[in-house]
Length: 367
Image (cartoon, rainbow, N blue to C red; front, side, top):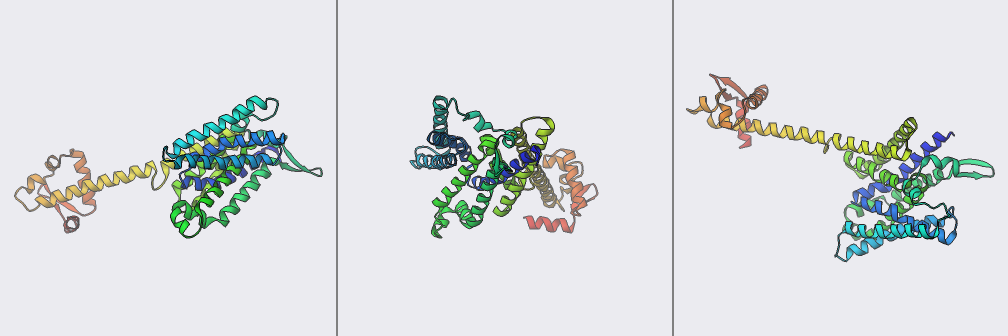
């Protein structure tokens, strides 16, 4: 495989691994918790490195996962006191643990390749050439690719095994508890998945892009779908598409791969916000325009019906005077009348408007 292909595969594997737990974070309204975990697990990596003095030790993964879960536990402990809300508790724990990690790195790891910028920003382009998995002289590819694929498989298996529990505890924790699903345990399993995914993606893409890949595709899928299964599938597909497009754009323009992928996710989210069929800006505008037109036409029908067959019908319903009684602009009134005539609800006789039988029947339904 070429380096280009390996980088592309790493981006795809990371996007799949991140998209799966990201769906449940978005549904549980815990997106900011993902931001906190992506930063605080750095403390777990630092502490595990001090114990092992080996950047390739699997204990780094264990330490980061433990600190990630600990971040959730500490945040919830502060929140449960009732003194501060959840976002404030995240704002307390997240800077505290991350700052401790930065201080420890600055004081004791000056000669080690353990860098804050590397963990936060990452660089996929450096993953293939410098960290290979070689067994008996056979090059199996980048280590980060296999790690990301492994985490993606683990996340997928866990979701398949505990899908009902995750779904029910996400939408109704009380009912999940009544069914014996132990929502607290399911919650910490999910947080463990998030922590594991974050630290596994550190070396390849960095914490910033992990947040984008974990939350962005899930939010886009949330806007376009109506079920959890559809959201999971769509989130994975959207993540892969954004990873591929971002990587290709980065190679074409010779820019940061992580930055290009994050930008692609942002643009995809912008498109979703604008074009989502049910809640997008375009759909909302069209729906509001339809409601305004419907209200306008209903008011006009009711006005004509009220004064129809009365001595003042020629004045109240006159083609040239009805707009004055409705307090509308002439053009506005003409548009409404034209549309109503096309529907066969009114007609003009002797210079004023009259309702057809169909128009009368519709007004009677309204009133």
